[in-house]
Image (tube, rainbow, N blue to C red; front, top):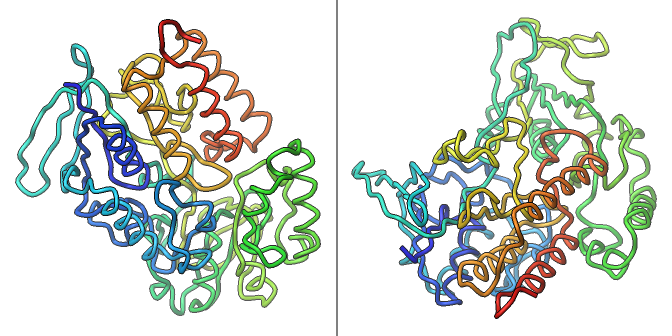
Length: 442
């Protein structure tokens, strides 16, 4: 009863396990697959990993590493998914909790029960079901595993192949074909670049422009600039102005490469990081198009009225935030079809004490250190060291957060979970310092 249930052994789940173990808090961790790593385990047999063969991280290893176990210095600045999976293996081995993870065990239901939550699991090999009651549940199953196709669907019909980026692994399937990649996020850029090396022709279509960030600026990983004194202490407008000037000096205007100029500020959307896209555009290997207007048999008609024959469409249109083990009529805080969640400090459901969500954020930076910080706060709450403010105060914070998102970021389902890396770290630290349980709450 007093044990904590951790759902998922990806990057956020293992962060929770490490922190709980270090605090002496008993836990059970359930993982659908045979190994840890979640999205970073290529061809993960949990069936949910979106990693493709050439994937590398878009934040440098110094930004991504857990503070309790830094990445080895011999790794490159931007390791591959193979190296990240190995790092996670070493992390679990170092902290000694692999035997606490129940592999190939799927959580099928989490239901409110007297004093806690009834968690039902299914053994994927035998089909045997088990139900245990836990006072606290930490949900860490990730939010990049349930593909979202265009909504609403494009009118018309298409004779060729349609696929979501989630299922892309290698570019060989595109050899000699005409490929349309829809989107301007990180996956869209990577897939368009790889496709352009083998395809007969590659088109890249998008609804809006984006600021394209290189992985290096002035000889250093670009995200190191986000931890500089300027980023830590300068106001947001000065950060945006400085970064914009540096990008203009480094690569000019994106319109010089055929991309539409973004209508939002440089920090007004989740960054798109690519060192290769602009080069491929400059070589003429990728043709930029506006958004799709309709599907047209053997081709596609675009918003500017042009039409192109296409064999394959790759939709890089994001993911749904889903928790199939939670009844959406009961757990309404995380069941919005538009990916909006109503969680205090992005972690706590005010209506369900003892239920916590880790890694359910989209930072301007890496999730892993933030999930680790979230886990420290949750451990405070689970152990009784920390406390939560009254429910009305939690709801007010959620409202304020949503209003801030609407003012700062482009309106889209991609930006409903956005947080600023350094700002959110400070936010969690203040929370832990403010609500410390003693003889009174101070």
